[in-house]
Image (cartoon, rainbow, N blue to C red):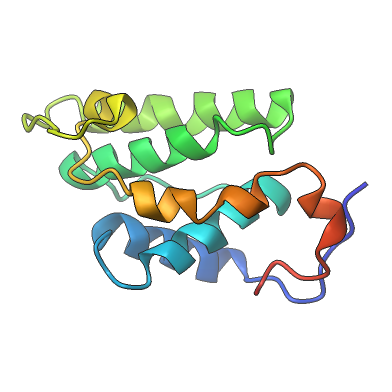
Length: 141
């Protein structure tokens, strides 16, 4: 089983990191924010609150969470829980968001996300491997 890490971000810090990522996806630190959120979602049982998002923010939050929950880093039960809890809420919140996405990424287009964050998601490659959870002493790197 996965051991608790000595250095973990608090849920409040992770929530702020997630909100910053969604509201300012073009920041130079977006890759690090995505990494922190992904690792916490995959390996620390973090569940972001999506209640404050509407329109474009809901679209991008939906895209990010949909993409993150598609990786095999999550067990089937946790994946189903997160997708049911978060994605359905975000789909309702962005239903009236009229803008189309012009991304080549079909998932970004589905969510009408203003950006597709391809570069940032590529940076997660090393952390998507199942052995990562047993090989790294700290997720806060």
